[in-house]
Length: 142
Ligand SMILES: [Zn+2]
Image (tube, rainbow, N blue to C red):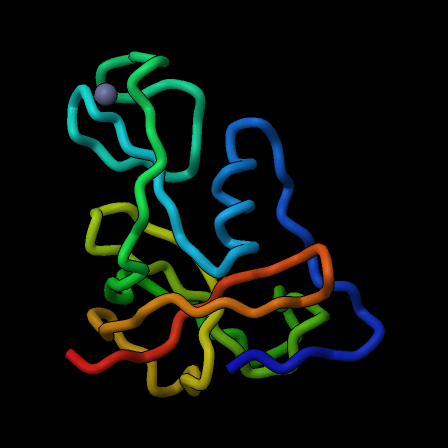
């Protein structure tokens, strides 16, 4: 679970032409992933060219289930190296989605001490303000 320290701004995602559609979907509480239909490969982060077949005109956006499992994680328990806008302790997780790509994020209602590699999780969305929506991962059954 991430709680915020009042008065410290949350870092905003850097949005460019490669990831605009990704963040537009997040704003609508949906997760989409770039997919190359030539070699059936999901990509993340978004980019202008498939890293496998080098094609630029084969990339499309596909909806993701948002489900996966924790591949790795870091627990922040002291203010050393921690992001000052988050109250301690908090975790940053690397989630491997069912589509095979990995996303980093924070957790929702999971205490950092309870996190383990392989934990089944799914995405959820939080509107931070009128212009920014972020995602987190919450525990799911099986
Ligand atoms: Zn490709």
